[in-house]
Length: 384
Ligand code: HEC
Ligand code: HEC
Image (cartoon, rainbow, N blue to C red):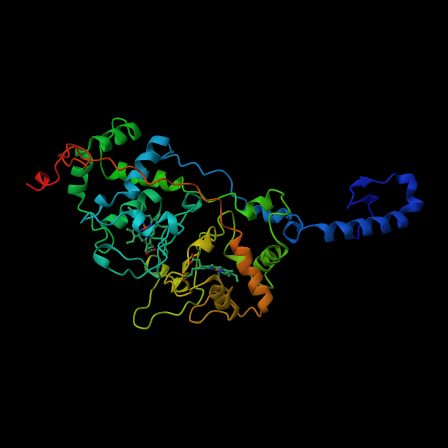
């Protein structure tokens, strides 16, 4: 509080200008009041500095509109059912939510995903939280939109191995699904396009916001602890963590591709973005993932090789492991232990308020009556 304003910040009572001569005495009193206030406050509620103007670049605004597929409640409801329905998969066992599990930060808690028949995939399952704000999809960016992406896991033999003919037959034969489709897409057929649009619309409603970091951006200076605030300073300081050079904008991603030096599994090197765009700089480069809700989605990196956020920070602090084709923005950081812990504490403030996502009641086929329908009163005769 070194400013010369004649306003006592601790009591916030204005001091009349004509009393300038008494200022030193007033300042002394203010200092005393301020000190008492600091001592009397519970530690957690100490206000940290307010955000600077540039910090507002991290503010999560309204959902970006999608002209080709506007979200409607009916589309989101259909997409919700489809997302959780294992009957979309080839053997009726795997749904999108098997891997993108809302209880696990819309990921799976595994190093790499596990698909149909227990097939272990080569890459980690990313969260789908806030995908509405992204412009690039998949670790290598091979999908151009959520609509474009949605059928991919169904078509993949190792993920859901969907038989599209039987899936469409299943959806068309269930009254509940016919109703949901008719409400979501009046007059349009039940087909790949409408399935993809509904899944995309539902995923766009899965938004993590109102985290403690967001509340601090909104002006609540007690939303962050001093340690978390310091962690954010390390995060954005190019001479310290230099994280914000890539983890930028409202979703903490630049929607770009970088090689951050994650060690390649010998003999099973992952080309990353290079497989989509054969530029030398894209070898081993992957999409910058969002950091929203990141505390919920361990383990980390495209191969799940970092078990904790501290392991991630240690990776950056030593300047990565595999130095071939390393991004110029990844180099040894020389952060002290305290700064590393501050960074981790900061990332924990990005956990949003969790929307309550109910498990949908999936529409049932009239041909497969549920147990409550026409159950014989005598359980013995039920076996005959
Ligand atoms: C077997 C596990 C599994 C299933 C089932 C699955 N996914 Fe995924 N999902 C993944 C993995 C792994 C990736 C990353 C793959 C890659 O980048 O190569 C991914 C990526 C995504 C992405 C991209 C996210 C981003 O930020 O780039 C979206 C969106 C997505 N899946 C939606 C779906 C939908 C919709 C379904 C159901 C139709 C589904 N997934 C089924 C494992 C799964
Ligand atoms: C050069 C761009 C770049 C810089 C600088 C950078 N990151 Fe990353 N970050 C990425 C990319 C790309 C990935 C995914 C890489 C992979 O898995 O191969 C990633 C992954 C992560 C992950 C794992 C997220 C997940 O869901 O798996 C965390 C956490 C993370 N970064 C935090 C940080 C922190 C903290 C810093 C600063 C110390 C930082 N990043 C600096 C680009 C960057």
